[in-house]
Image 1: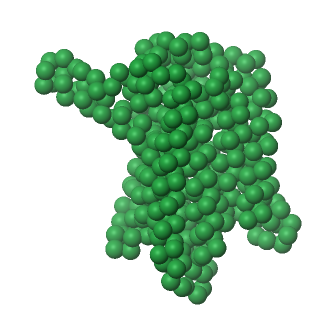
Image 2 (image 1 turned 180 degrees about the vertical axis):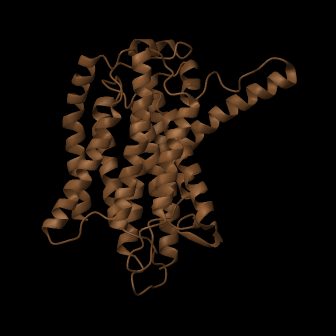
Image 3 (image 1 turned 135 degrees about the horizontal axis):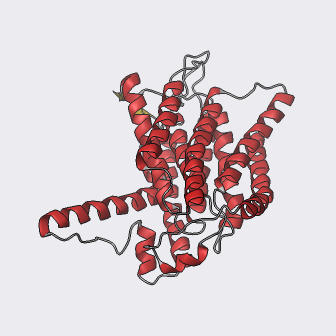
Amino acid sequence: MKTILLAAVVSLLASILCTPLVVAYFRRRGFGQEIRTDGPQSHLIKRGTPTMGGVAIIGSTVLGYAVAHLVIAVRGGGGPNASGLLLLFLLAGLGLVGFLDDLIKIRRQRNLGLRARAKFGGQLVVGLSFAVMAVQFHNRLGLTPASTHLSYVRDINQIGVGALGFVVLAYVIIAATSNAVNLADGLDGLAAGASAMVFGAFTLISFLQFRNTCGGNPVGGCYEVRDPLDVALVAAAAMAACFGFLWWNASPAQIFMGDTGSMSLGGLMAGLAILTHTELLLVVLGGLFAAVTLSSIIQTGWFKFTRIRFGRGRRAFRMAPLHHHFELGGWEEVTIIVRFWIIAGIAVAFGVGLFYADFIGNG
């Protein structure tokens, strides 16, 4: 537990202290955010605010994990494990895709970065690489970081998808969650605050798994997961990095995380769900992100349906994603953010409750 707290403290301090340096550097280089002209007009004053702040979140998370393992090594423990390194690979890999997207927006001074095909291509390479490696690296008990069974609060043994099916499933989860967090990153601090809650939940889940692993002597209710302590270190470091970044990203934001941050954080959530064998539970834990994504799907689907059916496209919402609908309805930005945080917190609490109910029910 002390090591998990250390990873969180180091990551928090790094994020709080280093983000202003990133802000100053990006301002000197003119790395400012471009704003959608068809969006809420109140957002136009944000044009030029430094973006790509996700690099601070990624760097702080890696640093927190590294320092924690340095302390473990000094105490005679082992080095980083496959699960932790795979999660950091996913975080950094999708962060790189997002960074390229942000950089193109800045260079071309438009709100469109990578083309959809290029963005999905980058997610495909990173996601498939993670998925393939996640079913390698057997430990002494024969466990791999991921399982080829569908999972909810633990593996559903009756539903196996096979190695190929797992790779496809993992990519879908990673791409969907990465894009979901990206869609939610439209108001100051919204994605950072909600992400911190989800990572906090995964910290608790992986810690409970660490304290109740099956090991060489399985007992009822134990968890057959690999490297749960490593997973908890990454989750705790990411949670703290988001909180530290939120200090500077809260309204009025001094820096935005950009696609660099939102895509990497979404990918990390997916990776944590896969490695903790809680894939379906992610829909509950990330309930806010699911709702925001669903609003965009409904908006697009309804517009296309009404255009075909009535000859004129109609919108289900004033604007999608969902938070912009309330903005155009007259809600203040801070009000939307706080209320959406409340929704995110309720979803996370409910998801943790489902996991804990199974934990207690299995002794």
